[in-house]
Image (cartoon, helix red, strand yellow):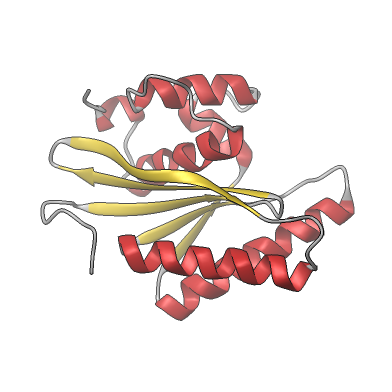
Length: 176
């Protein structure tokens, strides 16, 4: 069964990839502005093997896609990492998530952390707390989403809607 209002224009699934913690968010852009539908964190156990952890992430993302039927998936990419092993691991997570999107026929768009910070905070040099606070403000949340992975997933949705529709966040006009 599809969990979606009829008047929704666009539904975005935002993914902040990580092996231990993956942030996700489902956001609707409709006649009443942008609304978060669902957001959360997928955690895997460090004691499990990499294939088991990737399979767990893929299965949960598949379930989220099945439940919320997004139009597009926005994924944060890794263009630079200080640790090559970390970059490779995140690349594997992105691959698993994209494979599920491909099986579901879901379009995937990638954004760099710089793109996300610049869109949501106004500067590519923003720190995690600034992103969390701006996401709290833009979505009219009582508390900043935590951990930062969840805030990043919500920020990815805003970035996609801003880039995808060629408009600024001010024009999106998030209503309380």
